[in-house]
Structures are given as C-alpha cells and as structure tokens.
Length: 316
Image (cartoon, rainbow, N blue to C red; front, side):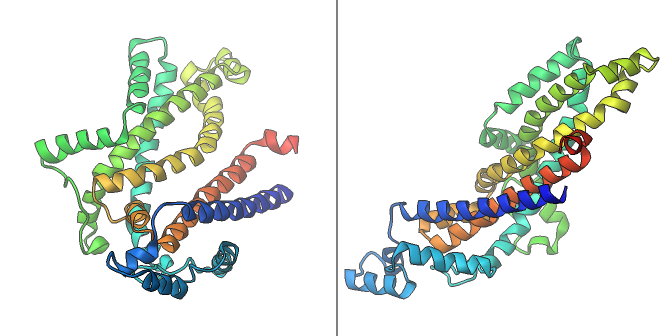
C-alpha cells in the first residue's frame, strides 16, 4: 500500500507539472494584448512596450514559465496584472462561494442517486423502476442552463420562495441569506449530476444482484432486498467511490456555467471575466488550483478504493 501511495503521489506531481505547462502555453496563444488593455485604446506602441517590459511580458516564454513555476513551488500563484492583488487571496475569497456550492451540489446528487438508483435496479421489471430509469436518462440529457432557468421560473418567479440571482454583499455574515442564494444553483447542478450518477448506481446494483454470493445469500433464506443490503451494497459503494472523482470534476465544470447564470461571485465567474480581460496570471493561477484539486480528488479516490477493496490488495 505504501509503495502504491508513493507511485500515485509521483504521478500526481507529474500531472500537475504537465498541466501547468499546458495551461501556461495555451493561454499565450489566446488573441488579445494585455498591455494594450492596460494602456487603453489611445495608447502609443511605445507605451504598450513599456508596460510589457514592466510586467515582464517581453521576456522569452521559457523564462516566464520557469519564474511562474518557481512561484508555484513556493505557494505563490502570482499577482493580477489588472488589480495588483494576489491570485491566492482572490481565490480564497471566491472559494467561499464556489466550495459551498460544490458541496451542496454533491450532497444533492448523492441524495438523489443512491436511494433511487438502488430502487430502480430492484424494481427494474416493474413500471415504477422502468419509469425512474427513463426519467433519469431524460434529466441527464437536459442542458444545465435550461434546467437552471426552469428552476428559477418555478421557485423564484412563480412561487417566490428563493432568490433568482445574486449573493449577499456581506457573504456568510448572514448564513441564512447566503444559503438561500445557493439553493437553486446547487439544485441545478445536483439534479443533473444526480441523474447521471443514478444510472451508474443502477448498473452497479444490477451487477451486484447477479453476483454469486448475493444469489447464494438469497438461496439461504434471505429476501432479495436483505441479500442486496447485506452483501451487495458494499460492492456498489466501491463502484460509487470510483466514479465520484468524475462527478466532482463535472460539478466544477457546471459551477462555471451556473455562476454566470445566477451571478454568483465565485471562481467560475472570475475565470470568465479574467479570460476576457487577458489577466493571464490570475487565469493560470486559478486553472492550476482547480486542476490540482481535481487531481487530488482522483488521488484520494484511488487510495480509498484500494484500501476498501481487498481484491486489489490481494492482487498487489
């Protein structure tokens, strides 16, 4: 287990290094000139060149990358070209919106997918189980923007229960108002991701029902449901742990869109604005932080799965 953990750690660090290089080079081929944006439309080429020299943008790209990579190794994500604030400081402030949104979305997805996925598998031969499976497939195909708009129409416009957009200016100083502002965005992401995860849970449950030890338990006198709960659900749990890394990545992608729709001051909305403004240090710092988080989640999922699954330990 220790050797496996060390190998996965080395792969995690290698993945972060490759991701940082790809992010840095990709952002340099985007159209637009940050020096021109800072100097203004009426600026002269000499003024723009002076800004490039002051910001270090006139140096060779390998030197710029090595300097930025050195900062990352020291925990410095860089400084915004437009505002002069630290990228890490801005990410922490924006994460106070994005992280709770992601946690709420994940909890909703699990609350929807786990019980309904098992129910759909157990009742697969009946009308309610089949209808639930068809409904999950239809919901998984719904665009997240359209789903958010429909939830706004129902719960904000028609019923008036929840705010349609925005986030309290005082943020979490008023936890009730902040939580109410996140309910509709979290429902939008959680229901879509939950529908996708439900189909996976259903498939894993059907596979567990067909395993020999579950059928043997049922033959010894246990009901089919009791045999599944006692002997099949641990296998389903291992499968769910495996796919959770992909679900978390999907939630992060969904948050970028949803924060625009609901005007939430999170990391996703910040990224969209900074890409348009060509604030390269801020964009690349945020992207590296998000990439590192996704890779770290995959790393934890791999270790957890190996620790919980005795078959992998025996193979090793």
